[in-house]
Length: 201
Length: 240
Image 1 (cartoon, chains in turn green, brown):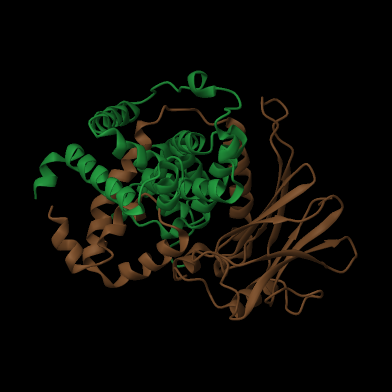
Image 2 (spheres, rainbow over the protein chains, first blue to last red):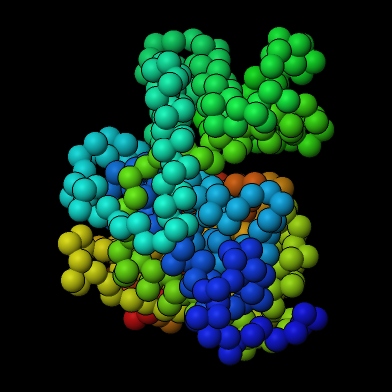
């Protein structure tokens, strides 16, 4: 291979010092230890998203497992100009969770949480990076709280519920155009609130 | 932003929000993706809205994934890394980097799998100590240079085949799942499937998987066949 042998000797401590994007370059060269660090950094976020979407622990784990293996196998397609590794991981996880929801019809039973693990599994904020993410999360939550409830509703049903706009229109007994309009208005307002300066341009 | 003007310029402009939320029906999403290739207006709108959607998961309560989950994933990853190293330079990742987003031609895939076919099997019984009984996960991974992969998830005698990175079946063909017992010829099933644009599919394997030695996939005429008419593109050998 043209780019030299993978640095298999690199210690976990050295790998941990690397940014996600640098780790992904090693992942592209089949560096399992580098992948393990990427996994450690993002597996909780992926699981949190999958669990919120599918509502069942075992299925959420299946979704995350599929997503992470897909990440490993398609690592070469990661393009840093298109966003962070975290967003990429979460994008794949979201994709897989939507597939699982639409495929298995698990929604019928997902309201019955299998073990109410929400409180008990709340993870500690271990690093500065986590604290920073928590700050960002607060910003997004504040922005969401400021939206009209009918816009939050369609965004949540679509993104976290995995429902299509036609399904949402059926559930809410609204025209499809109204649902899409609310999605559009809601995202636009969120964007303005999250990036006020940028939104002016 | 003045959407009315944008809507006048492009009739598809209003799809962008539903698209980034993944709320379009799959056929709508497919045609919108085609549309994006030729529409800078919609492409810009998608790029503008995507970061908003990307931020939504940050609002969720932070849960900890089970350590068994990471262990399971890393077991597969290490096996594949080892296999790829053993397969040498020709099977290494740079090959994948040259892989276009669209799947390769089936002939290539067949050749690649028939050639090397590192077929790697790992099975783990997991979850003995966990609260929730986890399914037995059987990994059958075809690490051929073509980038096709298959995993069989098995639980209580039922199995699901998850494939990634395989080409669309040739025109007029569909993929068919076959089951073979040790030493026996593949038996037809009624599991026929196509794959997504990205080459992915999840298929329930019909019947009881107990005693099955291999799960195979071939391209067959629409409606399926009773005997395989082409070389299998996936051969997943299950641990006995």
